[in-house]
Each structure stands twice: as structure tokens, then as C-alpha cells.
Amino acid sequence: MNNIVLIAGNEIAYIMTRIMDKHRIILEGAAATGIATSLGKRISNREGKIAVIISGHNVGLSILLKLIRNYSFTSKG
Image (tube, rainbow, N blue to C red):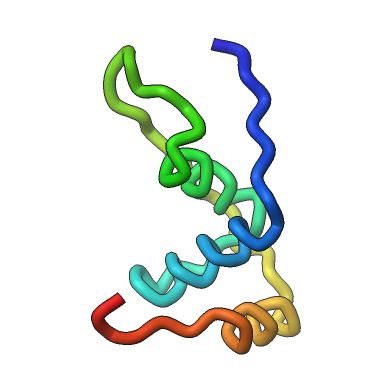
């Protein structure tokens, strides 16, 4: 399977913030792309389960602040 999948910047930012909110893990943008691809159903799992490796937390404080300001979740979300 050789496919290229494009993920929009706002989707990456959403996933970064969502993981930070729900799991208390800080991800850099590159680490969030696998999750965005999987949750956006852009890849098929016809051959079984999908594993996403999450690594990297190289994010500046100014980026984190911008993410927190732009995306806000309720405790139920």
C-alpha cells in the first residue's frame, strides 16, 4: 500500500489539542498526522487493525497557547 494522504493544518491542530485535552499528551504536528489520517478514515483497514505510532513533542509554548485559544472542549467532549 503506497498512498500519499494530505492532512489540512486545521485538522492537525485539532488533533493536537484534542489529544492534549483528553489524554494529557503534548504532540507535535507531525505526530498528530497519523491520528488525523486514521480518524478521518483516509486509509482503509481492509487487511486488519491499524497501528499509529505517536512520537514527538517538540512544540513551542507560543504554538500551544494558540492551540488552546483556538480549540476549546467541554469536559463531556
